Each structure stands twice: as C-alpha cells, then as structure tokens.
Amino acid sequence: MNFQDSPAEAAYRARARAWLEKNAKPRASNVRGRLDQPGDAAHVARAKAWQRLKSDAGYAAITLSRDLGGGGGSLIDQIIYRQEEERFDVPTGVFEISLGNCIPTIAVHGNPGQRQRYIRPAIQGEEIWCQLFSEPGAGSDLAAVRTRAERHGASWRVNGQKVWTSGAHFCDFGLLLARTDPSRPKHGGLTMFLVDMKAKAVEVRPIKQMNGAQEFNEVFFTDLVLSDDARLGEIDNGWRLAMTTLGFERGAVAGGLGFLDHQALLEIAMQGDDRLMEDSRVRDQIADAYLVTEGLKFNNYRVMTSLGRGEAPGAELAMGKLLSAKAGQQAAYFAMDMLEQRGMLTSETLGDHWRLVERSWTWGAAMRIAGGSEEILKTLIAERVLGLPQEPRMDKASAFNAANGA
Picture 1 (tube, rainbow, N blue to C red):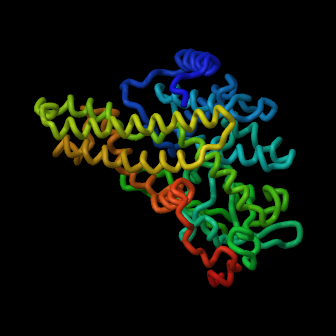
Picture 2 (cartoon, rainbow, N blue to C red):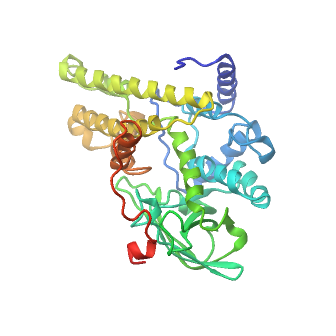
C-alpha cells in the first residue's frame, strides 16, 4: 500500500487546495464530515452556483473526459479533490448522486445523442439527476423491482413506485430501472430509462425524517409514456447498467461517509465536564474510536492504491462501508452518553460537533441499510473473502412472474 501521494498526486492536491482557498471559505470548526442537508430552494440555488464555478475550473465530474465537459482526471484525482473540499464550507450533497452515479452511467452506456444532451448540462449544474432504483419490495434485493415498462410501438408505458429516492423533490431527471419482461429470470428482464421528473405522470411525495430534514421521497409513475429514445442501453439488459451505476457508487465510498471520529469525540469530551478525561472508560472509548478510524483510513488507502494501479477493488469497499456506518453510530451513542442531559437536545455550545453527532446517530442507522444492508455485505465478504459456499437461491433461474406472482 502507498500511504503517501505520488509526486503527481501531491501536485494535484496542492492545485486543488489553492483553488479552494481562493474560491471558498474554510469551515468555522475543525469538524470533518458532510454537514449540509440539501433540499430547500435556497440551498439548491447555492449548490448550482458552486457547481458552475467548479465546472469552469475543471473540478466537476473529474473522472469524465474533457470532450464531455468533465475534468479529464482519474478516480484518484476525484478522491483527492473530495478530501480537500471537505475542509471548506461549500454545498456538496446536491450533486453527489447526479454526477457520482447517474451521469457516469450515461457516459458509459448512452448513445451519442444522449451523451450530448444530458452530460454537459448536469456537469455545469443546470440539471440534477436522481437514482430511481429501490422499491418497497426491492431494496437489498434490487433485482426484485416490480415497476413495469410495457412497450407500445415506439413508446413505453411505465407504472409503479420507487421509494427512498434521494433528492427527487429537486431533481430534473432520473435514472429508472424497470421490469420489461417478467417472463425472464429477475436479473434478465430489466431495462433502464431516462425520466423527466417534471412530467405530469410522475408524482413525488416527500418523506419527512425524524430530524426534520427531507432527503428522501416516494415516486409514483401512473401511465408515464416514454419514447424509445429515453431507453438507456439494450432492452432487458438493465441489470448490467445498474451494476455500472452501483460500481460508481462503491467508488465514492473511498472518500468516506463523513461520520463522527475519535478527534471529534476528544474535542467533545474536553468541552464537557473536566472529569471526563480523567475517567479511564472515556479514554478507552476514544482510543477504540481512534483504532477504528485508523483502520478505515488504511483500508481506504488500499482502495486508493488499487485504483491507482488500474485495479478494481472488491471486498475492501464492502468492509469499509460496513464498518463506517456502525462505528459512526456507536461513536454518536457514546458522545450523547458523555453529554448526559445535553445529549438529548441540540447544544449550540457544541456547534458543528453537535450536528455531526446528530448526523452520525441518525444517518449511521440509515447507512447500515442503504447501499447494501449489513447482512448483504457480510454475505459478500463471506463468499468473496472467506470463500464460503453460496446459499441456495431457488429464484435465480426462475421466471420472475412465476416466482413472485407478478
């Protein structure tokens, strides 16, 4: 593993840091992590302005080629830039799925007309995309989607429901995975489409979270008509495209989930009762958090080293995501224990520390499910790392409608 930037990577980091220092304000605190919660119109407008500035400087969609409007850099460049950007008070969440998952998928699988129409406006911040994958009965088992797209001549008619769609309430377009042939096995009868989220046949219903934020939505399609030009890739080959999208999503994990770490726990303890740091149990917990943080950092170095060699990391990403979410939530519980009564309320005296505690507690629970539940990730590690035999899957070769009554 390489623990240091190569000379070229160090030079890129220095350029990115200098540009950020010139164009953005550093965070008021030393807290690391993603604290912005996108959703309201003012935040989206601010994010679009920042995105256009990044695009003009070549720091938007860094891994896409320049002829498509991207930065023409490597995935390592993208990770380095993300690490540097976290130090600054800028809106980052609005475009993560749009430019991290959806647009790269269009760049790989789209036809020339689709790439020309959709990629550059998204990179410049003019249009935002969401990912229409999960359904009430198809979360960890994504291949079980029931949203139907039926062909009628040169068009398709879509009916169904998606859920937990991040950012659908402010997005312009969506990447839709739908079932086009229920007589085939569940992985084989899926097709991907490009959907106008402002169409009348698309209804977005917000999901209010317990912290008052609105990051997720339900999306309903009622006789939505799509031309065949809206189809991405080949008919019934949508699973392959979905794996491309999720592959880009896994790559983003190397940048970290931005949860509470040992440094934040230490600063919280030092702001509290003076006796806290005299308690050996507190010191032990902070030491344990340090070990987890360092382990995740070195695991991310392994990922980055593999990417730098042109290799595709596998189980490292699953292990990183599995441990990050759980560790973040456990750290938040411990922080609230240290704060005692203050741990039940938002404490202005803690500022960004408290916001990170809240995010790690609530979002940590969600991330133990989202992007692959802990059970799914443990199964992946068991099969691909430990070499354990796969469990029997009777529905893998059966027709979807026969196995699911659809």
